[in-house]
Image 1 (tube, protein in one colour):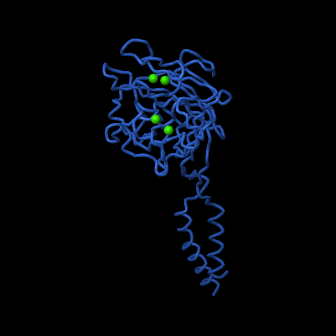
Image 2 (tube, rainbow, N blue to C red; image 1 turned 90 degrees about the vertical axis):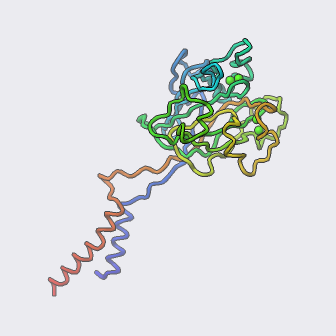
Image 3 (spheres, protein in one colour; image 1 turned 60 degrees about the vertical axis):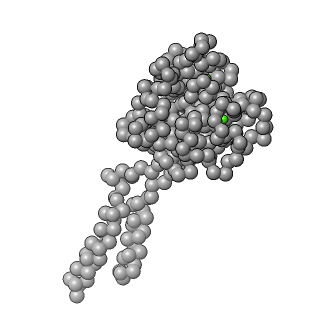
Length: 301
Ligand SMILES: [Ca+2]
Ligand SMILES: [Ca+2]
Ligand SMILES: [Ca+2]
Ligand SMILES: [Ca+2]
């Protein structure tokens, strides 16, 4: 066997034993036929408000959704859990300040504030991604689809980069914008309705609208998506999206929307070492095989 043939054989050997880890685009749908379970007041995958909802995605991957809003404290500066509802157009939020008092979130929980909105409070949904066995998996989020909105559909997206699991209860809303304080990184603010040909801001819109997000391919098991919040505007507008209402604050064009689909790539994970040799180990084998061949030749001579 010549050195060239031996080297070729080693390359073939490496190609057999080492398969580069890849990524696959996975979709999750927050629709009733993908709903697996709920917790809270209702245990049905229906439109009632619940504490959490878990959905299946492609290949059995899971996502659990919980709702949050800045309803804690006298100044509504900190986050508290909210109820999450499921509609044909996607997920909505009813926060804890729903009521008709002067300090309440008026209309919250009824149309259009049965949705995730930024009228009076900032509604948000936390998405936690897991594999089929329930272990966390890291996702690079790529698309967010809104299945229903009224008025406007702008979102703020954050990804958790801290250690352990994030604690949102009592988290100061201002601190969320500071990665050093909260562990949350601002991924960006997106105008989901930017392709909608219907410009009427007061109408209901039920044609799904999808926005590409996360151009820097940040990955996390925990994603926080909220109705647009100017606190997170330091990331700026998404380049190429031109909407006069987008960055002028939510008051002029408040956002009322339901999240229907998410799509993202699963971040590469190392292959099992027991059955698949590390590439570095294979590279070490190459000189070893040359030495073995040379010793055999010397003995033969
Ligand atoms: Ca709401
Ligand atoms: Ca509201
Ligand atoms: Ca918009
Ligand atoms: Ca808006």
